[in-house]
Length: 134
Image 1 (spheres, rainbow, N blue to C red):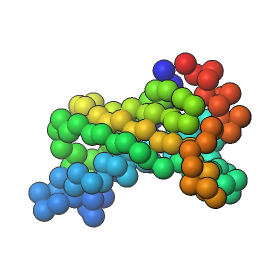
Image 2 (image 1 turned 30 degrees about the vertical axis):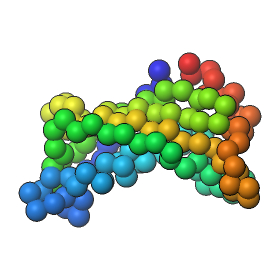
Image 3 (image 1 turned 90 degrees about the vertical axis):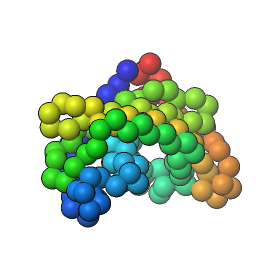
Image 4 (image 1 turned 180 degrees about the horizontal axis):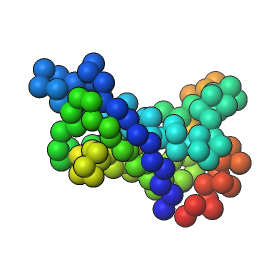
């Protein structure tokens, strides 16, 4: 299991009138975690897109346990779960600065050829790198 951590400070614009993070912002937090997890492994979304590959989310689930609040420093753990023939899957755990688990999540993404719009196998270097992690 390969885990990457990133810290996120809750901005005022991400909260509602109760200073609680609006539920839709968690998807953006998970994206930050996923992009940084990949970047940490030498895999760049920009490189993939420059080479005709997209990585859209096809499934996203979230479970809210406690609210995140304005100005909290959150720690997001992004956990690589599996790479299949065309999909990559991640789990997420979001903690507040007291170490309390706030939210969990899961996303599945598909490697897609930008020209055809069809699912494709990940590039060989990505596949080889990620296969060593499980």
